[in-house]
Amino acid sequence: MRSITTLFLAFLGWFGPGFAHAQTTVDRWTLESKEIITEAYTTSESNTTFGIFCSANQCMFYLHQPVACLPNQRYPALARNQIQAQAITMKCTLVGNKLFLILEPFNTILQATQIGEQISFAVSLQSSDFITTRFSLSGARQAVTQALQISSQKAAPKVSPPVQPAPPKVPQPVRPNAKDSVT
Image 1 (cartoon, rainbow, N blue to C red):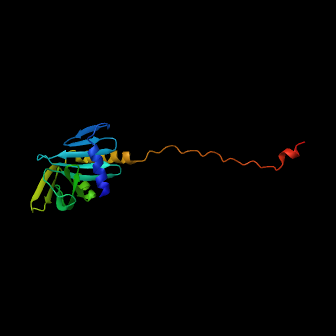
Image 2: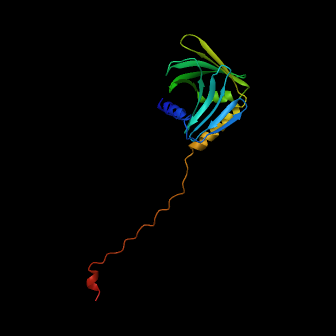
Image 3: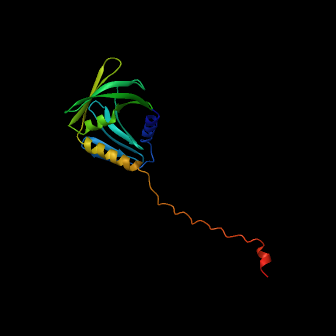
């Protein structure tokens, strides 16, 4: 939980000034990269956003939608592309004053974004209502792959050249009464 909170606090800083920013459009997806954060996302016709957010050495898929969920509540959901449907979990996370649904398991969502032309999510909320959202996968494969690659490059530790140790000092023998022996 703490790592998700830390990651999203970094996400809030994403929109602040002073960060180097690169943005690329890949079909229906947008890829954005800043100093420590990388994100690829798309928006549906209903103003819901689906994407992948990476910071440090951690990435997660998310949904951001106008319908409220309860913070820290987990919701069963279904992710479906043209090939298959998979049961997933969405965890409601409050970031600042916005609610995000974190999609789990990561690999299931990753695989689903790599196949087909669109993906849809059906979420059952506590009110027994279902929310269904649909997103284009046009450009998703390239945008998500690039986001993961950029993130892994940022997470790789910068290696500095090895420090050469100083040669050890060899102690000089101490001669007792050295002054007395010289005449």
